[in-house]
Length: 402
Image (cartoon, rainbow, N blue to C red; front, side, top):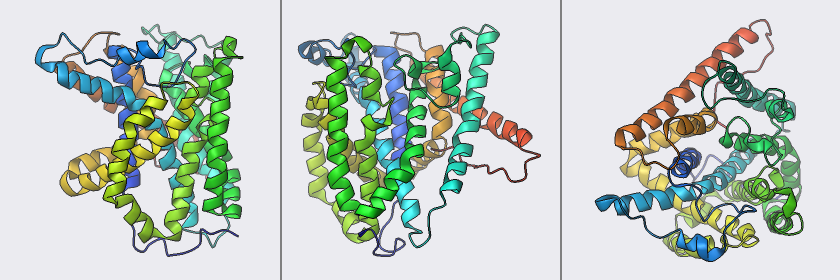
């Protein structure tokens, strides 16, 4: 019997940190892309088949030199931004939590899965298709850096949201692989929610979390050793197939179940000072595990937990002391899909690979990302309104977020 029924979800707790976490995750991912354009691949990241030896990657973490008084700030920018791939982990936890929480709030009614899929379709695919059209159009008119061969099978598979191939996942724009993974999680969520309700959140977590870790570890081992010739390690580690990122999603779903059952107790636990200190102390050892290919399977879960605890504390502090920061993160959460689709394109166009932009250039990049995201949303709203003006039963979602 499910153990998720319990205290009224409206009593004794606050999940305002959820939107902050989603927004911060997207902000961190964009920071990672900027960092990558300037400094190249970060040595602590998802493994690839051409990963240098551990000692060489550790040596690449030395503080930056040659920038005078800016050595320290730039080193921090490089280190924190280089870890921005962990924003994906944070976003998956928040997504698993949010999807599960919205259903648990109406636990007495049977889920409307048809309506669920319709809402997800209108939330993602119109903007997804507009982005594909814009990129193809820019390539046709000869805009620099936008050349995409429309005859490649991967182009049309991408339009369907299928980006599971090693090279296919980066077609059009590198950051778009993330949307392909999210689409997969949306597609399979009803199955996992059925298991969640049947088992209860404790059993769900106790079984599926280790299973997810083992599946990820087996894939990392296989694509690093016996199947290295497929050059699929990078794709598997990132999440081209959703199973390799299942642990983070399971964590989010289980947290929603725990909070639904005993919101006050869970909030007190997440706010406990000893837990915050533990997350800080655990962070570096957890990152150390990620230096080993198979160790990355355990590291991803430990780091995800640390990030969840730390970012939640950051959200609480921001609401109290820096409300403008909290508002900015919520804005990023609302516009996460459009930001995901435009950021790497703008960065690649405006930052020459391996060069350090000055402050005005950096602000210009940020402004371009924001303007491009809003423009993409406007194009999508306008196109959707025109395309569905004669379809009275069309379900459109006003939100651009995931």
